[in-house]
Amino acid sequence: MMIPKRGISLVLCLSVLFFLLSMCVHAMGAPSDLPRRIFILHSYESGHVCGQPQHDGVIGALGDAGFKDRENLEIRSYFMDTKRKNNTPELIDEQARIALKAIRSFRPDVLVTLDDNAFRTVALDLVDEPVSIVFCGMNGQPEDYNKTRRFMESRARPGHNITGVYEKLHFVDAIRVHSKLFPGLKKIWIFLDMSPTGLAIHRQIKLEMAKEQIPCSYEIRVAKGWEDYQRGIQLSNQDPEVGAIYPVAVLLKDRSGTTYTAPEIFAWTIRNSRKPEIAVNYAFTKMGLFGGAAVDFWSMGRQAGQMVIKILRGKNPGRIPIEEAERYALVFNLKRAKQLRIEIPPDVLMAADEIIVGKKPVRGGR
Image 1 (spheres, rainbow, N blue to C red):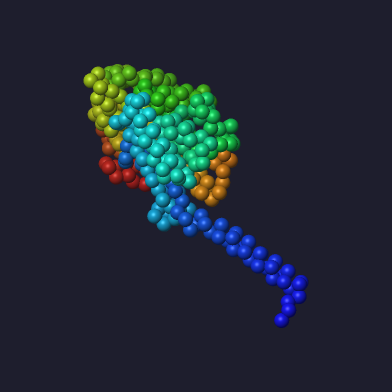
Image 2: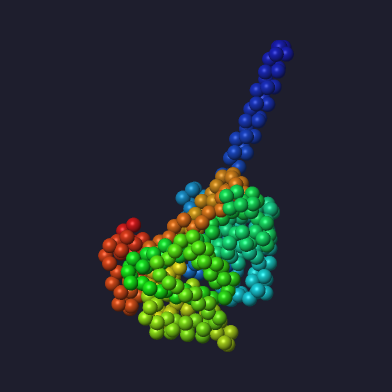
């Protein structure tokens, strides 16, 4: 039987149409069929009190969006350990070389960097390469890093392959909360170290106070080493006007070259300081500091995770605005309060996000 020419044309058109539709369906289904690859690069060692909550926040956000490890997601992590072990410029650079090799071998869809050392030494080497990058927990100003290697046109529209979450300290909020808790607060001492992170935090504090005033006087003390920090704490004990300290020195070396990081520094501080500590972040309250309004690392990680989700769903990182950490947590350590003979009013405790009782956190009323 002969098929009319018009019939042949119709069959051909329908065949082409079905072929194109099947190709579109296949293309649309590919991302969900193949596991997406995420590489999380830590400046810290494994299980670090600052790095782990950020990591967990990222993974939690991905899981809630349907991206599950070992199902449709493959996650690789590397710990540069630049705080405790590899904390000289030479050792940090060596870790960066190892990390870059691992990243290029893994070929992730998204690289997440936690803290400044990972961003500065690795992410900036990958500007405009075929990998999307989300930073988290950055203390240095993005504009300063941009002078080293141009990775953004503006915070509102980065324009390259990098976006992320800047770690706003909420320093002014923390001091205001503490001054309400202690209405007679006259002075606080801020303890910093000389590490790159310490210097970045110093600038962050200055920038926040340039925008908003705090309701007391303050003194910034940059510890040159472990012994200098110890002297500073002892001097603060002797000054009756010092109503609180803000300890952000988390990398110190003594005269013999021994390194002290947050666990050792804070353990000594708790034993020797007679002033309540305003904790810069939630994790430090769990380590024994008094607390107050503190950066919530888990929430910051989750915020970065939301950016990763947008990228996995097809959005260009250059069109995702760089954000500040949105949330701080109100957290108190009751064991430390008892040591200092401080009674926290019930209404303040009810407003807290969490209350640390011994080693176990208890959810507050917010």
